[in-house]
Image (tube, one colour):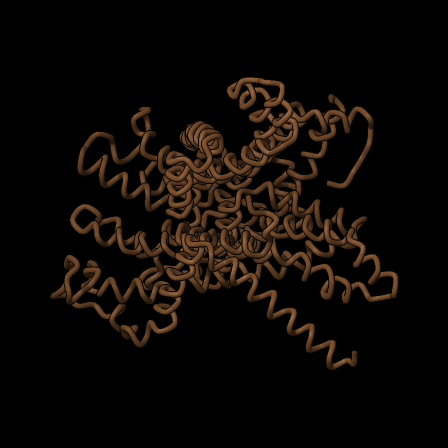
Length: 316
Length: 294
């Protein structure tokens, strides 16, 4: 087991480097150099050149990439913003808590709703509850999150005046954004849990448990749930990514100072280091979450554990 | 049987298979509802110019600003007096075009990479999978935003941005489907009598892996429509005054209290088009592979 975790941790290094390289390459396609972007095309060439040197842009692509990675690893430095000339990492650190809170809240709410209703709906297949759940989930999966957000904003913040429409700070500010982000992924989780559960209920060992005379509650909780959760857990990592994406859009609606508004503002201002730093930061976080989910999965699924104990290898 | 006869019977078999799929699809009421909604939206998309001229959704009419829906303006008018019905109808061209185009491009690239990874295995598989691992570690929206940041906002760049973010998932799916098909005896047989790799992949492996791929592509269109609308909504996709649905919602935000209808109609169209592709996809799942049905 330790070997598995160590192996996964080591594998993180090339993946993270790859992610950095990918983001760096995409953003290097931006036309123009920092000097021209900041000073405009009418600026004096020597000013442009000196600014380019200040941002290290006078060096070739690969050297810049290596310097960038070196700065991150050695000094936790993500470079300077074109706009404010202040360290990118400072802006990220002041905005990140809001995005993280929103993402974690949304993940928890969607897991709670999606998984519990999914199980209920499968256990009572074809009941009224099941139909209502399936149809609602289908509709929520097709409603764009940001549209739902606008509707909630209109109803609860502007018309009823129950909740604050904009900003961040108190827990109240997070209620509407959380609903906005979590509904889409809750719908996805509900559908997935329901089908995984239905499939599990049809397995032989469930019939065996029934034949033994185990109570229905015991069968669901002890036998079915544990097995049905496997595919659900594997998607938790992806759904974290989806929540993060939802949070980025929801921040725009609710004018919340988070990573999403940071990135979109930076894109409008052509502040490439800011976009790069924020994207890399979130991507690194996301890879870490995927790693944790993977390790968790190995802990829960005895088959993977066994594979590593026997040292056997197989293609996925 | 001579060659021509064999060809005929093969063609016959194909039509009977298609009609069998259609028969199963037709029995599914939800899927048929999806198909009907989709046909209506497609009708609007194709005949948009005949229903309302494009000029209607660009020309500004000062006297008719922010009017509520009426017989004259079915969906009301926006802050520049432009007819919202015209803008929504013409907007469907953007959303459906983006949805279909991105899904098909992602499908082709995903099929080439996924099929090679699954079929050849070994080094090819290793390299492709490692690259995909890296792509999978960047949440899709961030990848799209990075592309938009570098290339700028335009229809073409939006298509690139969304396509890139959906290729990894496609590669994984097609690889896993191809892996199971490639182990079948008929593939082994084709290999044993010396068919080329390309022939085996295109003649035997991909057609037999088609079911899940078609379903996935239909569902993907729905996701792509939602992503495109989302990106346009935060100002990183199609820019106003182009009548893209997400862009419509973005500019309607300022008037949401006085003119909520500006939000309702574009949003409803996004939802309906996404829903229709989803329902059709669900129906196809059952129709293409009756074994999968519960």
